Image 1 (tube, rainbow, N blue to C red):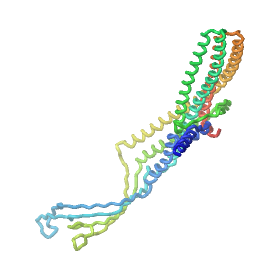
Image 2: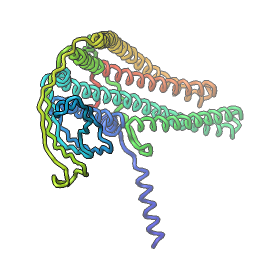
Image 3: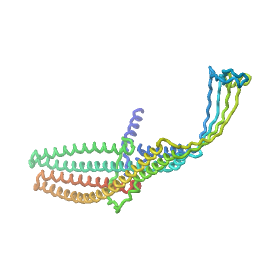
Image 4: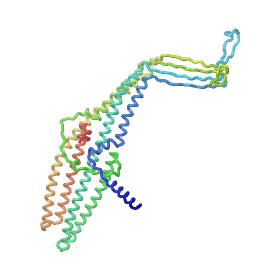
Length: 445
């Protein structure tokens, strides 16, 4: 019975481990945005921005605190006074003021009435939220671009393996033919050895490609935040070439990178205004209520009969602070803030040029790769046609084994070149979509 259960459990484990997840590009991108640490952390920054906003808003709300203390004075300080005030002119009286024990408890309140820096901070709160939202969008686009490029790279390696497998099968057929000829004395041993060496080389290359597939698949899963042990498969349809729609000019000012800089500029402007608030006066309201107990004994829970007396007191006031001269410190801070704004504006100009360059280069790459794909497609057709003719001629004794092997190599190279051209096109297509600020459209395909 135990053996049956063990076999059953093992079979379940094998069936689970053998499950393969079909992964379209859209599936890969959606999974990455939901599971990759970069995307998650970016969303947490958006959440954290709300708490930062609340922190700024708290400066405009009343600040209330409770306080208390207990003091024991083993030696009470004395004060020397003129005895004339006590009917003894010409004498000096040394008097001690205070008690051995003092305890105070109370509440204090502070409310900003006018503080330009607080008002500026409140205005910047909304911009802060928008900054983190745009930053989150930029992070998601970076995840999409990275996953898409790696997705296509994995697919190309798998296509190369398919080609090598097909080439291995075809070479095996040629080997069987040559072996039959050799057995009948119609072929030389060197011809058979050459075929065997080629098969060995193909098999070695297959192992290398398999290793590359494993490494690139692992990288793709890492960029997606997917468990490395997950088995994935990619539909061939994802690698079809559909000519991209080209427009005359992309609006780079709609790119997330540029929008993020614009929001950063707004925040720096508010930062400058906050520094300029140092020129303005501030006015605040303060209020406090306290209860104090004094006496020669420990005051807590003591009464007047013990010599301890309790009383309350309170105060309400206005605090006005008018800056007159700060040693030009505020002016220096304002000028530093202005330099930060001007420096960022230079970054914005440079970024705008860079984004326009990316768009132009992407279009050029798209055009070039479309031409290359058509050329390689024709090369593939011709190479296959030459291979078929050479194979037929070889069987009829009209072509040498060298001609046949060269034709096979040329056919394989043409197919590999076509696959690489398609990969280059797909990567250029991602770059073009990115340059138009439309990476998220890949989620809708």
